[in-house]
Length: 597
Image 1 (cartoon, helix red, strand yellow):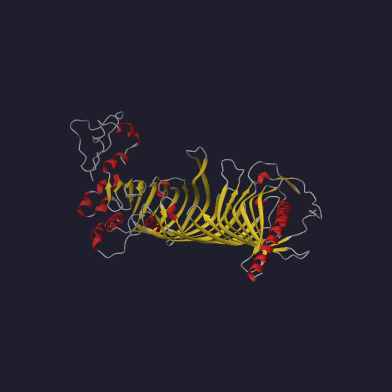
Image 2 (cartoon, rainbow, N blue to C red):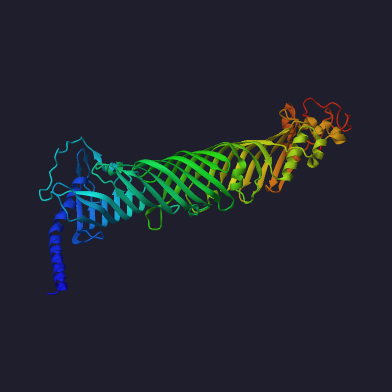
């Protein structure tokens, strides 16, 4: 017989032996796996198929190769101190396939070492906390019985999984379960009732990206798996904020977390060097540091606080980000986005940082120091963020300087004339004097891309202006009306011989301590504003009357006739030929005629 024939016979003999051994070991290992999992999870375990082969590994070591399919572990039916109602719902664990290698060596009393178990298609379905009903603690047996047919134990090195799906159910009405997709993970340092180490790559749905994380998990809480502790750190790089309608930028985030599968506390930071509202296009540097509590059962997040920096402005925010649900064409509830509700504070910020973000131009309308308190609400939707965004609050602007030369000249003219310096106002446009700095404050609301200011107070030296109106973010259209109150009288504002002629009219323009008060309008756009004084409005709103003339002042037949007993402010007193020199005491008198400034 040739050497080749001998070798073939040896290989054949080993093959037959391997088949026989595998055939005998297969039911033994299957029973051991099912029994071990059942005892650990205190639950029913199903395994559709399990096969064992004997072969040579890449290291040249003979051993057992095992493969299983259709492994299911159901929620525990009865645990010491815990009762779980029987359910026909989803299993706790559902595994499409698994495989591992074990050496042929065996020493009595020593666990068989399995260096690595590979999993595919894992789905972990955690019931809500209400599913687990706590009862009085029961004393577990000191030495739980083991099957006499299964005297062998195993020591696990690590578990590697490709493709996992974690579902955390919620008992809250109107909420969908939280679903987490895991691209891959590795668990090591596996010991019964001990903390394990893990590394994982999670798929973030929006903005789309991969979150890399590592940390510790466990011990596994059999009485309620959702309460199993977890802690670790994460990195999230190159996330495209363009996945959200209306904003853009490349986001990176790092941080740490701890808690349980159902409730996790996260401390992290984000960096977006090119954050922008896509409708306007100007990019800004946006950085945040945050402390958040995440409800793992539905994804709702409470932010307390978020410290953000936009350009040179620091922003403090607190609030919540809640998943919003809607019924789609299939009649089922689906996640349609997130509802954002925040309280925002800005202390000594810069208004130009916000104007740059919400403007098509690179030059803001004005600059200045900003203090702000407001509420921000952004509902889910498909329209751009600047149209969905709603803000309501109060702001104060100090040391405000307009960037438009035309506007700045008008503000300087208003201030100097209000101080009674008309000569300086005429030459101010050609002088090198420092710009006039204004102060502004008021309440505001932003909705549908329009800023509404119901009580804007605008102050410069010599003048206080009270306005109310709207400003459109898109296009910058202005529509404001109100009153301007100057320190100087109208005659001092005009100056010269014209001012001398207007001295009799000073008393008509005085009101509430102001030297001059007139109605004003601001129209046009922020690039080309138009300022006007409403003299007709002045006559309506500031008509001087004595208490005994209120009724008669509204009469069109007599309101324009000067009283014979009251001298006109522009004419000397003369008796009228057509009226008595002294009117009857019972006849109401007309108010004085109005001068036309």
